[in-house]
Image 1: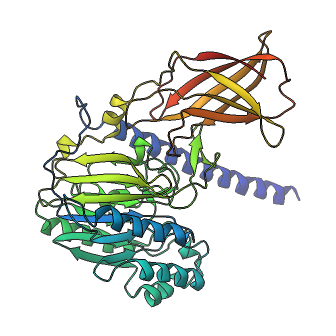
Image 2: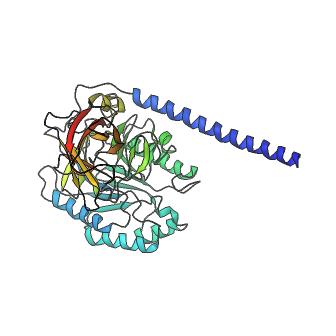
Length: 446
């Protein structure tokens, strides 16, 4: 018995040691990559703006993670046409690209419903290319279903007006979002070929998961397998989804030796809080973002985020020359340099009201941030008139909801506050790049 126990403990020790070693290696790689990311590039005087004489040679729309919200898909297509049918810069939409997770479980019924939506709204002259996401890959016959209903391969290359578009579903390996060496080789070969033939033009690549350590959400909703495929290919602009992290976070664009863009989601946002992913704050289901991309033959690219619920463009990025890696403005280092600590105005106020459930809704004035940047979190605490702290939390800012309301709210249980009493709300605002405001203390009565 002792011999068996000793053998078991030895085996257990080997397993624990192996897991610990693996985690240590992961931590070292993560920290190393983070150091590389945050140190690249120069700090510019200002972030780029689109010049008045920018004239596109191609325009396309990218959307991702629709998860059976086919009404949003239809609305996105119709909206894109209405925006650009009579555009003075460049008329029309040349293509739509879907980045996967149009289904929840990869059922054939979901393929049929999605394809029917596309056929009902996309015009015959407009290219439409989709890829499988990890939710489609829940089905063992995803490639078969894909070819049957879309009529082309899950990995495909498309030429539109002299530009190359590489759409990569990959082949599933160990997990739903890791790929076989063979499929990665296909992607690498196509990237090399496209870049060699592109001249000054960019090369557009569409994948479902983010490359690790690039855009917002790529710390976990990612695959590190894509990084060595794209590294050094400065013509590549990679569009990805999977994380459901909002596109209006400025970290959703990132440039290293290539450009990465996170495209948000058309169904359900996810965010992180205190560096922990998987957070679903209030109104997280109000998600309907897509991306409009325009490019010219000289390597200039404009990327804009559009929100269907408010019918507005909410962010814009302009790359003057995709070929000039030294001029990249959307590095982590430069984007952080242009961020600033949020600030509360002198007119900031707080108030409390009873909601429909009998709990207390605490509201306060938003902090102010530079244009194109956000408050990501608010650190809040409530003390009574004697200075005793009765509530403390970090709450995610509602920046992902595009509206004109300048009030942030959160809810506390009804048994924490007493009607008729005075309280003090202390708030600190934290930006996307982790700059904290000066705390503000606001008096309110319940």
